[in-house]
Amino acid sequence: VQLQASGGGLVQAGGSLRLSCAASGRTLSNYAMGWFRQAPGKEREFVAAISRSGGSTYYADSVKGRFTISRDNAKNTMYLQMNSLKPEDMAVYYCAADRGVNSFSTRASAYNYWGQGTLVTVSS
Image 1 (cartoon, rainbow, N blue to C red):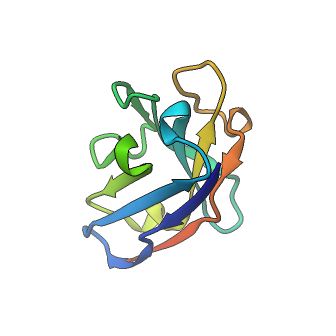
Image 2 (image 1 turned 180 degrees about the horizontal axis):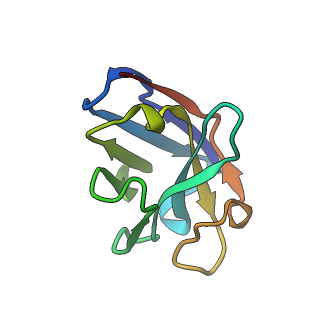
Image 3 (image 1 turned 120 degrees about the horizontal axis):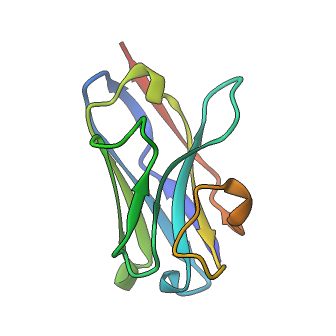
């Protein structure tokens, strides 16, 4: 499956952005999905994950209550709605697909396919 992340940009602190991850080549419903991010000089970190059906979601503590992950399997697309953005949210955001048997994972190593990343810049 090929993944294409989009929707990043420049936003003021407190603002919102919605990221999209479009899949091609395979049906998205076959994969658990996740969002990760990587800030300059830091390791890639887990942000949110969603099960194949969309019925289960999981968030990093740092984004819980502000970010919402969702998916539309009919459109082969996953989303990350980001509200109340903070300067510390600034990073390149990556979407990823997990073909394994788990409902979802917080570990980057569990994901088999990655999008190219989209940059989110938050100004204070």
